[in-house]
Length: 508
Image 1 (cartoon, one colour):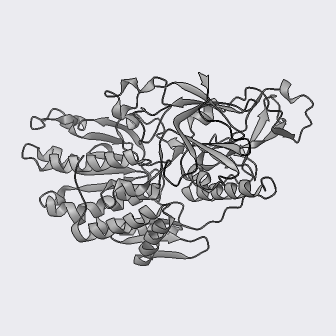
Image 2 (cartoon, one colour):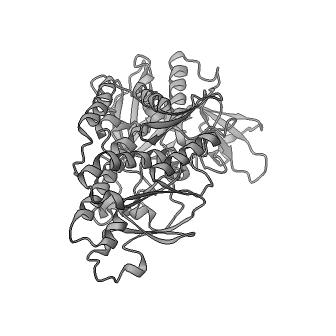
Image 3 (cartoon, helix red, strand yellow):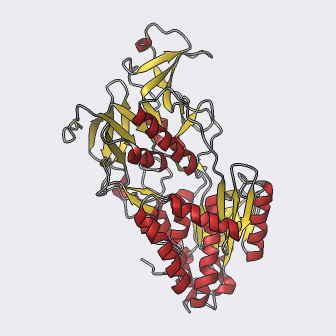
């Protein structure tokens, strides 16, 4: 490992290192004043993903390009290094980075520590994945931790290996490819009726906005385009949404959730609530494995639920929430030495803080990094007592899904919250007002597309909107929130092209 010498320090500007290129980190880096700060973004992916558009990209309503914004561009004022943050020394103000330019998992959802073994989805092709890349150190004046979270699988057997997720553009590409594979295979004369039925059975696990929107987009793809190309197969397809909760869209008003469920039922999408997923494996359900007409039993999957037993499916899309990033759980858990130059103790009077063992203060339930109302990271001394000394680091901030404000722990882990935190912190840093004002979240409402040009919307107040009007607002909001003018032009262009000529179902 070597210190980084290729990026000289600019004396008149503070260096702000931003870990992560998601909603919080990317928005912050773009908004920082380049005359005051030398901004360095460190992320394993070289782009920002506009996640609400991934469901549309996965079925060809939009192209993948429209959901991406590159970190490096002609107008960017930030430096960038493609790598993983591996360790932090708060006292020395250095971050240890592992290079990841050749990382085979770039562009895909992460479900486990990258060094615990290969991801199941590319296990056989990418055995070298768990090898560590070269390390280097990067100094900072201020550090922003916005590394996000991983996809939660609850350690359900087979999910990491065989399910599809929807958190990055690589996931979206994989889903589109798999849907088309299922229809192409089902159309072959060599495919048995039994296998055909299973291939065209699509399962979505998770009844939140992501799962509901993907189910709606998939239903639109099949009914608007694929039924014209595969007319004999339309009668065989099935989409089922599974959720452990008694209702889908639980964060919405109950009436909107019921409207969404009723709409799905009319469209033929099955909703199975209060269902528990036990396993996902390759192959047909056990009684059919020995059927003589099945030439390739590995062509589909078997989803096992506690309530229904084994179910043959062509694809499972998994969207059941978030788990804490291993970087937060492991690398940031222990503080090497108390950062006396930048941390101030609070509450208990501590005369010699360097003699105590300190750790990042984390939320009990989620494991997220706890921050104060100014988004500064909090430390806690390990004393073994109920009351323990605490400290606040003045130069380390945490944003996005990996962070929890101690006085507002119920803020949802959404793009809207992360975006507002990024904008607010950039404003405070640019004006030099960090520590003078507290962050305040403004709820702008939540929306979800439910198919056939219909949506549901719950505003920050008590106003609920549903149907075609909500769909127009949904599209308008995503269009205006797009970061670049390039994508603000491309998105409506693809909407118009697909409306006129149909979706592109090329499989690549």
